[in-house]
Length: 410
Image (cartoon, rainbow, N blue to C red; front, side, top):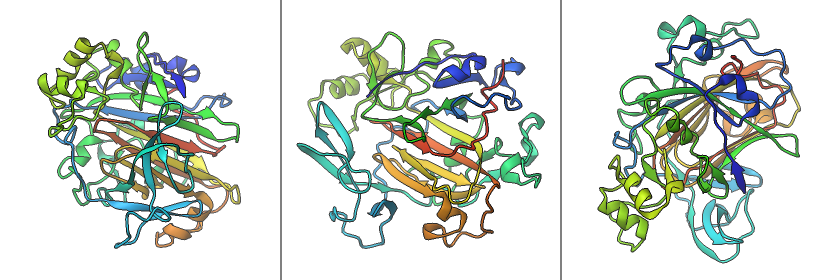
């Protein structure tokens, strides 16, 4: 799939573009950067408000080529679940596997499970594992440091923290797994290495009525005008063309070149000779030498997105997610999807009907059963911290998603 990516600094153009980066934390344009009242016209495709934080590739936790302890993902029918301890990871009738094969070009995807692809000439396949427990099950709301303009009204009038402080929130570090010890909370906080950019992501309407954001190995996107397309999810690539002060720039190559790599890959050989993946200018040097500017990307960033939706009983709505590297999804401030760690593309689904009634994997969650017509918050936290590959998918059928507050300013 070939996509054209466009980006603008003007938030007023948000409704026409798939991505808009409206401002940075040190931008003095208060009209552009403030949170706005939702627009009256909500006929456009729904959008998620996003806070990006960009990090240099030299920062701890990025481009570390970690081998992390993992929990395998199993499948049953059309559902995903964590495999119980002791599961045979080679059991392809139960354990989800992700692989690469040749089908009109190199293709990657799931070779089994509810979202399996047609596989021809399989080159390799690995069980999908994630590192669970990296975040605590409840979000932290920084109420004492939340600016007044970032506090939003609870649409149900209940003054719930997870509604009114959803822009001043971060996950709390859990078990310190997969290189996150002492670092995780800084990935979603201002200051230190982080350079902040506020923006939106706009969904694409699907034939089945759902709304989709989907970037990965099988999507080739023109992230930078004038360059060839490349596979993956790199929303910050174009931004450094406008202001190098707002991001750390494109410091990595879309290639798997760990320090112990002994392959004769031209890209890896040149990259290591120039200083390796942790060197801030080595990738740029190789891109210039080999003429592969389209392979040069901004890999080191976090993304925190937020919205409010209305639950309608018996609507049959299912939320779908895929991430390559860490993703955590919280609903009403409680952890609902735990895909932590550095890993291949890993999926999750939330059946809202089951979630509302606390059934299935959510049976142990505390709290009352949802009533039809009530509003709820969703926060998605995502990390991109390791080459190669970068996957991000969010599919929602929700027809009652609140309008963006970042994308409505003029």
